[in-house]
Image (cartoon, rainbow over all chains, first blue to last red; front, top):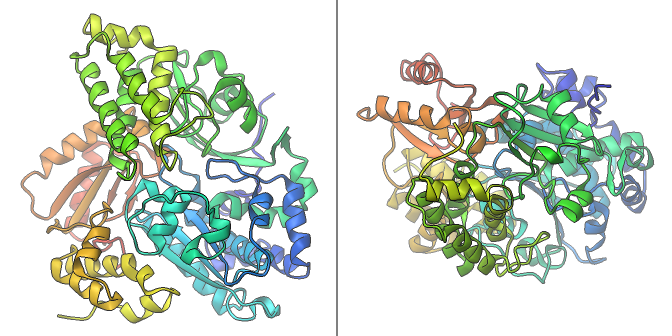
Amino acid sequence: MTASETRIVTKRLRERPDDSWTLAAVKQTGGYDSLRKALAMDPPAIAEEVKASGLRGRGGAGFPTATKWSFLPAGVEPRYLVVNSDEAEPSTFKDRMLVERDPHQLVEGIAIASYTLKVHHAFVYVRGEFALGAERLSKAVAEARAEGLIGPNMCGSGFDLEITVHRGAGAYICGEETALLNSLEGDRGFPRIRPPFPAIAGLYAKPTVVNNVETISTLPGIIEMGGEAYGALGVERSRGTRIFSLSGNVNRPGNYELELGLTFRQLIDDFGGGLAGPGPVKFFIPGGASSQWLTAEHLDVPLDMDLVTQQYGVMLGSGAVMVYNQDVCPVRVALRLAKFFAHESCGKCTPCREGTGWIQKVLYRIEHREGRPTDLDLLLDVGDNISPGLNAPFSQTTICPLGPSAVSAIVSLNKFFRDEVMAHVKEGKCRAA
Amino acid sequence: MTPIPGAGEILARYPSKRSALMPLLHAVQERDGYVTEAGMEEVADHIGLTAAEVLGVCSFYSMFKRSPQGKLLVSVCTSVSCMVNGGEELLAALRTRYADDPDVTVEEVECLAADDGAPVMQVNYEFHERMTPAEAERIVEDYKAGRITARGPSGVSR
């Protein structure tokens, strides 16, 4: 049987493809009904609904949202909500869609979360390159304010909420929450050492919750259907739905909102229209560029956040799944990813600043037929300096996970494609087309 | 020199003046085409920083350009999904085509979060998906001829 999408977060933008971002369409499709419903509840009751839903962060780490919220110390104000829309993990493209095509859903989610958390000023950090997204979100905020849906005395509730849209300027590291906070404070996007965690000392050293766009955009749906009903979807501790960004060598790349627990094969075949080009699947990257890789033998693994990490050492991460056919050279993919991480390393921690550069250079000489027989082991040694043990979940000698993320590809090369790497080195040839 | 457009409104958005630094740099770039040294000094004056402190932030972010650019900034993605769908060939073709055109700056960029439309380019931060070299050139020419209205140098609607 062919699986189908379960559209909660993507419902409006799929049903109203031509105008889902407009206030008119939002009003016609029950927009802000969940906010009004939430405002009639006590904030702790809303938090209970979110807890019952089992919602976990959709940005990559998968931390339970209600638990993250519960870390805010009682009675300390002001406190802030910061929404992370700095989506830049290679091959992840769900948040851009949500911001461009359903910005009012995000505003509604922000209002629900802010009311729940007693936050009166929320920020959305939008990736700088998302010009259209920032424009539509700013317009949605202005419209919502003009309608009295947010702003002073929002919806007549007596609760005040300001939302500020902040544009980034091109730095992947700012997707890391503490780097994002530094950037929002007008500084370089350097990650901060934790503790203190943002819940205790975040933006302007005040208690702060940082949540991903998809996480916050899911709140109106959870309030509408009830936490228990949302939590009835999914598998094990992966509850509800997630948007998977499918790309690479597939016939129908795109964003698909799926109940968690379906398999990679279903995602690729039922939704993506199957592999494009010569099969079978050579390898796939299951959770964004930071994840280790899987191969054709893992296609029937379920989309379960904990199982993929515990049994296969990979992660669902940001929900990006990249699929490659037999013509693709894994060394070339690893080199391109290494170039990305070397470019985006912020330079604060030595193992990452130096190590990502070494990884790129050594992969470059392997790819260009100048590799040495010891190069793969050299790469693993460099990786071990960044992420001792080379395990998943990883350990790290760095403040943030960017460095360990750069190691994932070389660990995967060693695990699945050692022969192909050595063929580059010893025979001076690439086995892929 | 004209004041930074919208500076007062930008500063009012934040509990801390310093948070206005990046928005003010975007505004300077919109006004001047790139972030000039004079622009950084103006931003510093608004916030109460030195120009060197502003430069220290400005230079961290790839969208802030500190030298004159073409009126059109063509950003071509060559990250992994675009790479296996022709992104590198697209970049090479556009670099060759516009090598001597002062109005067009072609740059290689990291993933633009539009992988379902690979290969992807942006022209002044407007997305164009499923590009071929010929189609991409046609679009850039449409911008040059004014048949498509370009966003500003920081991606603001005109």
